[in-house]
Length: 150
Image (cartoon, rainbow, N blue to C red; front, side, top):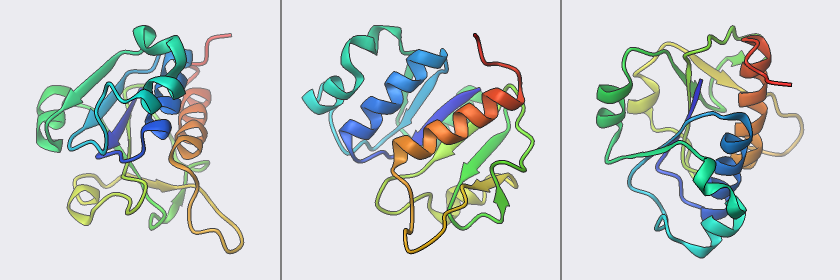
């Protein structure tokens, strides 16, 4: 299992996700361009002192990520997806890919995989915070694949 952030924009979100990845021993892949510098104080603060425990890889673009990680199944997270994350059958080597906070995954990235999931949302809210959505998806994937360490 791995978490992939495509062009993340907000340092505290990426820091929180890095902490989540450290807590679950899940590799984190960041695809440039990033909306911040990796030495950003807000990024470090959100990740606290857990950065040494994060298996993080930065890729210059999506093609580089694919070339280095293939073969793996790409799971696109999108509010436009038809399938709920709770009904999707995750596999241990999946890459869960989330888009930038302000616009989500672009169509050309979404088209790279037939696997797309959404987190159901009720009411007037359009989307969840990126780090919240990542936590929901990751823990469901870990639960389904028995990768949760107790």
